[in-house]
Image 1 (cartoon, rainbow, N blue to C red):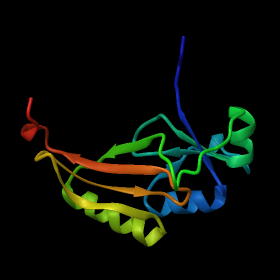
Image 2 (image 1 turned 180 degrees about the vertical axis):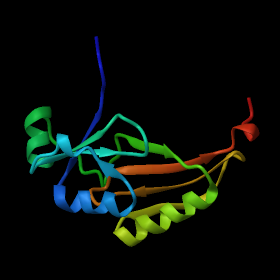
Image 3 (image 1 turned 45 degrees about the vertical axis):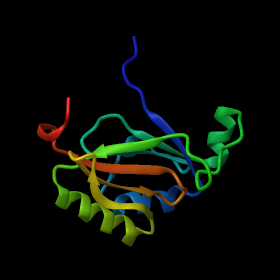
Length: 136
C-alpha cells in the first residue's frame, strides 16, 4: 500500500534553490537532504517536493531534462489565507530573485492570485480562494 508520494524537480544548484525557497518562506525536511537533493515543504503539507540537482535527476528519469524557462510541464499551486498574503508573497518572490510573470490580480470573480517562476524556470502560483463567491 502506498504510504506517501512526492513531486521531483530538477534544479541547477541545490544551495541556490534552497536559499531562494527559504527567502520566500518555505521550509525543508532536513532528514531527507544530501549535497544533491533536498525535500522542500510548501505550507503545512506533509508531501515534499524533492529538488534534485539536474545530473542526478537525469540519471533517474533517463530522458533529457526540459528547459523550464522555455517549456512548461507542470504548474505547482498553493493556497493563501488572504489577498494580503498573496501580495506579500509576490514581493518576497521578487526580492529573492524569482520572476513574477503574472502580477497579483482578481481571477474569475472568486480568486485572487499571482504566478511566478523560480530560479530554474519552474512555474508556481499562489491563490486566495473565496469559495462563497465560486459559481457552481
